[in-house]
Each structure stands twice: as C-alpha cells, then as structure tokens.
Image 1 (tube, rainbow, N blue to C red):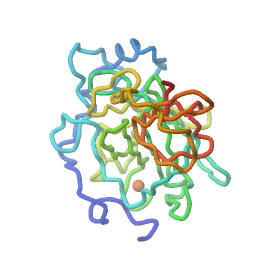
Image 2: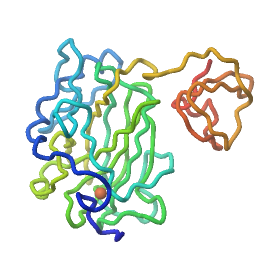
Image 3: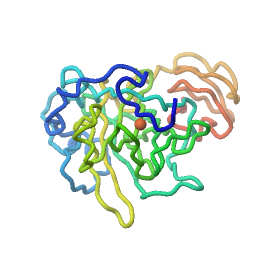
Image 4: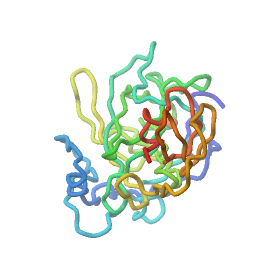
Length: 289
Ligand SMILES: [Fe+2]
C-alpha cells in the first residue's frame, strides 16, 4: 500500500459505514454532567458548537450511546480502522516526539458507559497522520496508547493531523473497556471543508475544537456500549490466591493474581508485562488485593 492512499471504502480495510444515517445525530446526545459530577470528575469550561456527552443533563435513564453506523442509537460509531493501524504502540500520552512539526493539539475527554458512569482503565490507542498527511509505517511516530484514569478521563498531546487524498482531517482511535469489545473509530474536526465530501465522516464524531495559544484543544467523550461501574466494568473478584511473583515478559489476563514486593495484586486488564509496568506503577493494569 502507499502511504498516501485513502483509508476509505474500497481500500481493503473493511466495510463502509452508513454515512447517510449519520446526519444530525451529533446534536441529540444527552448529558452526562450529573454522572461526571457524581464521579468527582473535573468539568472543564468548554465552548463550541458540538454537544459533548457530559454537557446535557442526565435524564434519569440509560444514556443514549454515541450512535453507531447502522441504527443511529448504538455506541460510538464504529468507523473502519483504515490500513494504517499497527499493534503494540508505545504507552504514552504525548505523541510529539523529536522531529514532529505541526500545530500543537491536545485531545481530552472522558469514557462513559451507557449508564452514565465513567469507566476507568479503558485502553485508548491513537494513531494519526503527520503534518504532511503521512503515516509512519516503519515505526511508531504519532502512535500511542494510554488508559483512562480513575475518573474515566484521558488526555492526548499531539499535533493537528495533515490531510491526505480522499479523506477529511481525522484521528484514529481504538477504545476498549476491560474485557469488552474493541471500538474502532475516528475523531473529526469542525469546519473542515472535506467533512462535506468524505463518506466516512460522521458529525457524531466531531470534537469540540478551540484555539489555545498557538495550538488547539479538542474535546470528545466516548460512550461505550457497556455499563460502567466504579473501578471498571468487569473487575474480577480476587478469590484466587496469588499464583506467583510478578515478572516481566509474562502474559497476564484479568483476574490473575501475583505478589510484588510482598503485596498481592490482581490483574484488571490483559497485557504482557514489561519493565516499568510493575503493579504499583500501573493501576490500570493491577490493583492491590
Ligand atoms: Fe487515516
């Protein structure tokens, strides 16, 4: 494949979503403000034209998830991942590495379940084009994954992605709550001329974007088709005794129990251990007990 080929329909990456049903869905989401406040989440003052999930007051019933591509009433629209996804991206929230030029951009927000509860420990894996519209297929430039924090929040430091033929401006992301299916989607920028012609574009996936000094700040809240519970949707009960001492290079699955420096920990998300991911350092992967 060529680096500049569009990752739209027909490029070998999957089916096309129903773009027609997307019109107008972005303005109908109800609020998660109450849930976020109840969870102690810091609510930044935002301005913009796009409704965030947290912005409208909760209605006392199940939260309408960000729509999917079929019926307009499902979870966040499952956009194709495009041909440029690479697994095993670095764990980092800042993608601006040496040699990266462009307009500084931060993207932040929360991950919620449909029951209005923020979800912690959600894996968010971002990848995007550089300022010239090229993806790094030989390395991991402008690629990185992170986990939502205890309040369900995430924050990404990057640059505004460049345009490439066939697509409007966008950032790719895979979002996965612990032990839940992966949502593959894309985030879009308001006011982009190509939003009107890109068949993958969905207004429900628009970020709020505002100027911030010499850069920009984008905001988006994901709503996954799961019910969030404090501490994660699927924390396994710590019923089994620790099976050994934590070690690097081991494939742990949720529910595995280990000891580290004399303390017992339970794995809350499947991963392969590595130096720096010792249980006390990565609460998204391990919790004491
Ligand atoms: Fe792309």
